[in-house]
Structure formats: C-alpha cells, structure tokens
Image (cartoon, rainbow, N blue to C red):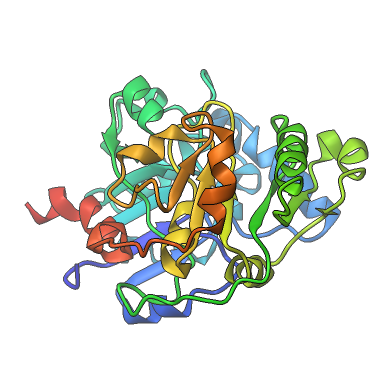
Length: 322
C-alpha cells in the first residue's frame, strides 16, 4: 500500500478524520467543489445535464468546471477510488484522458436505482472495476463484494473503548421509507418496559410537515453529537432503507464503541461480528426478547483486521500489484 499514490473521491468531508494522517500517500476529497451562491448552484446543475457535444465546445458548461482541486494533479495517482457518487461518464473520461493507466475503482454503499447513470452497466466499455458492500448490488450487477469499514474511526485496531450508559436505545437517520411509523411503534413497545429510547429523525423535504410532529426532529445533527449519544446509550438502532441489503456505518459504531446493535437488516448475520448476545435482528427473534437483550451486559466484539481502512484499500490494489 505504501508504494501507491491513492486518491479517494466522494469521501465525507465532516468531521475531519485526523487518523488519515497516518497514510500520507492517500488523499481524500469530494468529487465536486461546493457551490455556495444560488447562481453557482444553478450553473452547476445545468452542467450536469448538458450533453457532451455541447460542453465539448463550450468549456464553461462542462462538469469538469466543478471538479475539486484533485483535477489539477490527477496524473500523480496510480489508483482512484470513487465512493458512490457516479452520475455520468464525464469523470471516468476525464481521469483516463489525463492518466490513461490509472486503476479506477468504484465502490457502492447505497442502492442503485435501475436505468440511472449510477448503474455499472453504463460503463462496461471502460476499464473500471466495480465493488459493493451490498450483496443485492453484487448479485444484480455481477460485481465484487467488499465489506466497508468505519469511516469516522479515530484509530484502527487500537484499544477497545467502553463508555457508561445514560440511555438505552439511540437512533438517528433521515426521515424516509416509513421510518417514523416504525420508530413510533417500537418506542411504544419498549416504553411499556421502562426502556428509554432516543430516536432522532433528520429533515427530508418530502416529509417535512409530517416529520415535524415527531418528538425528536432536527434539520441536522453534527456527527460529534451523534457520537456523544452513541457513547451514552446501551444499544444502537439501525434501520436500512428499502432495497438495501448491505450494512450501514451503525454496526461499525457498535463495534468501536462497544454497544449492542438492533437492526432490521438480517444481512448482518453473515458477518464475523454477529453474535446473538450483541446483535438483535428485528423480525428474526421474538420482540419479547428485546428488553432482556437491551438490559444484559454487552458481549465484547472480537473483530480482526477485516474491517480496517488499510484492509479496505488493499482490496482495490490487488490488480495493480499483480
């Protein structure tokens, strides 16, 4: 890994992950620079929908105008990993034009809607390698399955950290896919047994009016506040979106902070961290067992290096390393 120059695009920009300083040969950025003014946002959106035969003549209409600073030295990287943000051929064509031998990889961590620019089928003529942590995406598109890792971890494979608990179950997530109803029903059941739940829904424009009636509704929750709530709970609740079969960052948070996991995703049962003492899969066990599950001491996670950043990156380098 140290012999490579690696660029990762589509990386979360907040909070800043200081532990990445341990990898001076890895650079992480968003694909596109932010448009702050209204007119810039309008121009940016126009560029994303301008046909190539037009923007090839008028450069100001090209999506390239909105690429981040990484575009100025793309030729210096032997490997580029794009996380999820695929919206057309322009980025692949740009990279290969500037760096023809580059090892370009795409990693999907969220569902792919059929017949959209995100689909790997659109790029079968390009030397791009596709991966996903979602088994359904892997099966649908015949690409390679690859587990994710905890993106926001302060360090890797270090000493496990455990924190005192001042609440029982914590959830934070976007208000979508009927989550409000699921959370309310679960909260009603657990409250009857004295289980304290903190469920937070984050704004979604399509459901804004109705979601504001939910007890804990916010427009935004900073990740350091998310972590503070995780540290102070006994169990983290994960609700995956419809059609998603891969795991989110919630299981990795549970592993790192020594918390139990409650999830509606039965896909977790195939992972090495799964154990009935630390993971409760809704729909696979009687809901009456959930109270005892929450109140019992957590079973320490015994997870090796398979979910570390370095292991994740190395999986993309196999081909180029021969």
